[in-house]
Image (cartoon, rainbow, N blue to C red; front, side, top):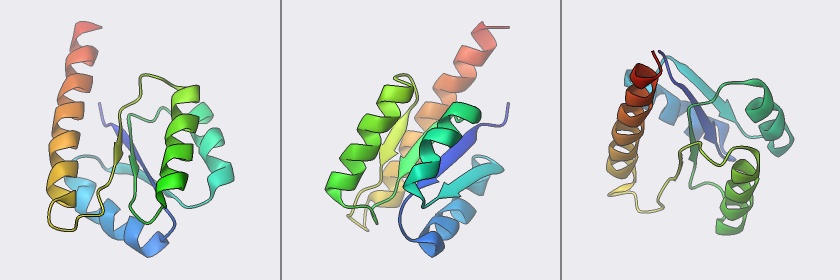
Length: 110
């Protein structure tokens, strides 16, 4: 199973850079900067994991998080840290853990 990652933020260049770095985890990565498309994506796409970029304000991140949880309480999401020293490392750890759990769930369902 190839997990679908959804990266949300304001800066398309930053999201594309992050998507390139995350290709090792999935070849199916969606980047989105338009808030009005998030519901449509989550309702129509089988998204496995969501990452909220630090280009969003704390208020925007909370709003998106609440919106995501209202649509799907079980989807793993990560708020990318503003700390440049640890943000990527923390994200990688989160992705590895989440993908392992997703793969275990998929193998149990077979």
